[in-house]
Structure formats: structure tokens, C-alpha cells
Length: 225
Ligand SMILES: [Cu+2]
Image (cartoon, rainbow, N blue to C red; front, side):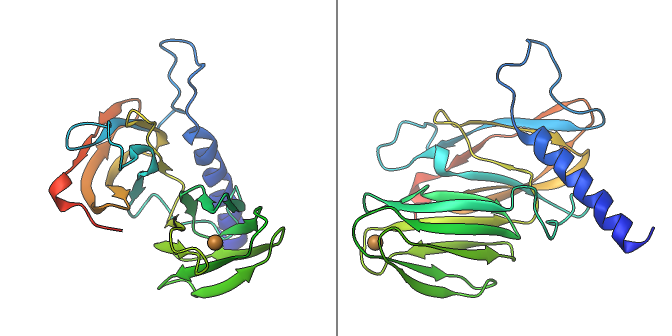
């Protein structure tokens, strides 16, 4: 296969996987939301056995898969852009998971001056001022977790979680998550939350089946931010 056709095929497969990732809460009961030949992972993320925390939001965690055979990010991702807004002296969203290669649009919707300071290692770090109403775009090509700060407001912080492929999901407020359309195989599943060391385990996915995987973060390993 020549490389151009290979790239086109990969892009098509990636687009298919991306579509499959969207959960379908309105689907008929009993309907199999997984495309033929794929499986799914369902589970719940908790902290010290519960999701009832004032300090931690389980919905700000990111569950992601990696492994050879899941592919790496296409050069031009399906959703080529994402937005990180600065509004009411807050970054919105607080946690932004993206596929490597995605362009992030940084916006300032406030009436005051903001700054965006990216503490990155694998992507070029940057530090830029953003006057009210202005926006600026940066592409994050390498997979890593980047902390975003505003040097004007010490309380402002966000995280851009750059992932090698589109097999990721954020839990609902009750900690439940579901990843559909996953190719069969043995993969690394990772749970990331800003306040805890990430957890990684092996998981097997079989075509037409749903694998269970839940994770509970140990509160005693809390990281102060
Ligand atoms: Cu600011």
C-alpha cells in the first residue's frame, strides 16, 4: 500500500472510531452501540470510594487507552480544533482532553487582561498575553499533560491532556464512563486526575463484549495544587 493510501485509510478508520466514541444515551434498550468487530469498556471512577467531594470533581478526570495497534494520532485530527476560554477569571474548561495534533484556540472573553503560560515539555512552551476580546491559536503535536497558568491571576489554572489517539472519555458527575468502539486487543488503560498520581493497568477488549474497569483514587496520595 502506498503511503498516501495508507494515510487516507488511517484517517477514515480514525474518523470511524471518533464517531463510535460518542455514547448514545438515546439508543434503544438492548441495541449494541459498538460497530461490528469492536468492544467497549464501562466503569466508574471514584475517590476514596465516593464521588461526593467538595474539593475534587471526578468529571475532570480523563480515562484513556494506549498501545501499539490503537494507532497514533493522525496528522489532521477529525476535530482539528478545541477552545480554552478565559471567562470570569476562570479557564473554561478546567480540563481539556484532545488528540495530539489538535489546535487549541485560547480566548479572552473577560474585560481584563489575561496571560497564558503553558508549562510544556514535549510541546514548545509559551507565555503570551491576551488582551480582552483577543484570541490566539497553538497546535499541540505531542502527547503529554500540559499545565496552563495565567500569570495575571494566580488562582487560574487549567490542564490540556494531549492523548495519542481518540480512545478517551471523561466520567460523568457520578463517576460513570463508557468507551465504545474500541478495537479488540490488550491495551493500557489510564486514569488521570490533577490531584492524584495517574493509574495505569492492562485491559483486554473483545469484539462484541463489554469489559469492566473501575478505579478508585487513594485520598492519602492527594497532590496539592
Ligand atoms: Cu488571568
